[in-house]
Amino acid sequence: MQSIYSFLPPKLSELLQDLTPEMIERIEEIRIRINRPVEVSDGRDYMLLPYIVDEEAASQLLNQLTRFSMYTMEEELKRGYITIEGGHRIGLAGKVILDKGSVKAIIHISSFNIRIAKEKLGCSVHLLPYLYRNSWQNTMIIGPPQTGKTTLLRDLARIASQGMEECRIPAIKTGIVDERSEIAGSVRGVPQLQFGPRVDVLDACPKAEGMMMLIRSMSPEIIVADEIGRAEDAAAVLEAVNAGIQLLITIHGHSLEDVLKRPTIRAIMELQVFSRFILLGRTRNGGFSCKVLDEKGAEITMERSVPG
Image 1 (spheres, rainbow, N blue to C red):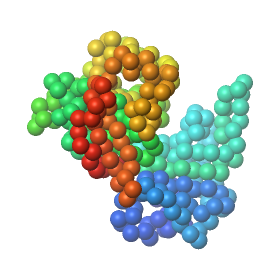
Image 2: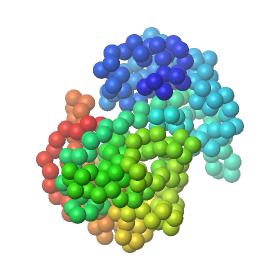
Image 3: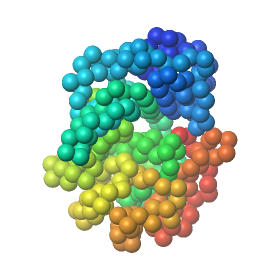
C-alpha cells in the first residue's frame, strides 16, 4: 500500500492509514469521487465518512498519477486507466472527448477507482492436480468481478514460468498478453509482480493481436490472458490451440452456462478447446469459493474457500 499512499492527497492517505491493519490487508478497491465520500471495498462496500473529496484533492491525485504531465499519459488516459508502481490500476471517469466516433481522451476527471494488485503466492497450488497432467490443461477461469480471477491467473502464470519441483512441473516459456496491465502490473514494460525467469509480457496490447504476436516472435509454450470475450479473441484462441500452445485465460461470467450463451465464445466451447473450467464466486460472509469442472462441465472438486 505504500506506493498508493504516496499518490494520495495527504488527508486521504492519513485516513486510510488510520484503519486497522486487518482492514487495510482486505482492501480491494478505493473509489474516489469529487463531492462524495471515499468508498472502500473489501468484498463489502463502505464509506469513509465524514471526509468528502473536493476538486483540489482530485487535482492533486491526478497530478501525482500523471507526474504533472497529462500529455505524456495520453495513451493511458485514452484507455481509461493508469497503472502505477506495484501493479495497481487506477480507473478513470469524466468527460470523454471523441474523434470520429472513437475515444480521444478523458478530461475533467471526476472519479478514480484504485484497484489493489494483490499477490497471493501459492493460492493456486491446491488446484495443480487438476490443471497439470504431464502438461498444462487448457484452462478457463470463470467468475464475476472481484472474485479473484486475475489473482489466481497471476499465480498460475508464476508457477508455469518458474516450475514447481515438488509437483514435478517444469518451467516453460510463458507468454502473458496483459491488455489492461493487471496480470504483471508492468511499468515501462517491466513486470512489477513476481514471476519466474521464463516469462515474456506484452503490456497494454490487445489480446487477439498480442496472442498472434507472441506466437510469431516468442514461441511460448503457454499463453496467459485475462478477460477474453470478443470474436477476435476466440479466433486467436483457436489459432493458439492449433499451434500446440496451452492456454490459461479468464472470462467474465457467473457460471459455465452463462459463458455458453455468448455467441462469440460458443464456437470454442463446442470444439471442447478447454479441458478445465474453474468457477470462482463469493460466499455470503465475503469469502471466496472455487470449484473445478472437466471438459463436459462435470464437477471434479468439492467447493471450497480460496483466497482472493
